[in-house]
Image 1: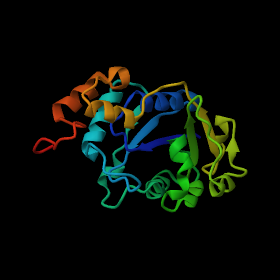
Image 2 (image 1 turned 90 degrees about the vertical axis):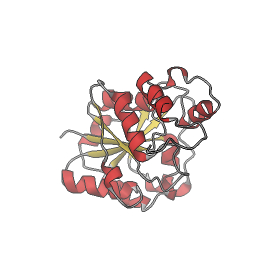
Image 3 (image 1 turned 45 degrees about the horizontal axis):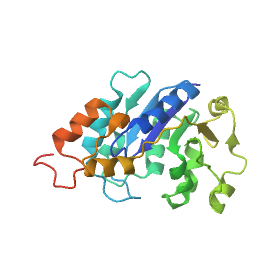
Image 4 (image 1 turned 180 degrees about the horizontal axis):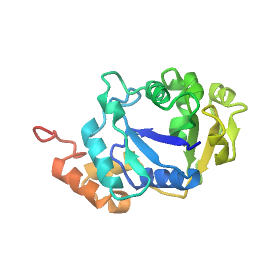
Length: 219
């Protein structure tokens, strides 16, 4: 069966590093990657752009790129963007037997024990963890390491053999972009270089985002 892969995050703003993760996953797993921007991320400070703006920037960033799409489902929910709730909804739509994977970065994975109902994630989906060169995944928190015992798989094909419950490491090419560094550069008025798609850079400038000031009226 075809593996359904969803890539969750705040994407504040989406940058070349996010796209590199999605493209690497698309090519390694041989399937479409669906970005799921969080509307109300409960685990961090308020984003610099609102949910609609972040989704619109994602649409601009991936326009014309085969195999990448944006899924706005979390923007339509009134409750916080708990990943477990999103996966419950997806599981209800896809059925119990469809292979489903949630793509996330190494830092987010290491922080999994702080997530809402995090132990239930393994029953709902596989986890695909993107790890950049020079960034070791271990050591993991003890409770996460224990929860992952017997779940690790080196073969992407294993993710299609069952509906959920495996953990797969996706080796990434090096890329320096991070949202934190990018927001600092934008706040300082420094050029973003090739970290931003031109259409996204134009959107940020047009809407006055990440400058430290108030958003324009109606934005």
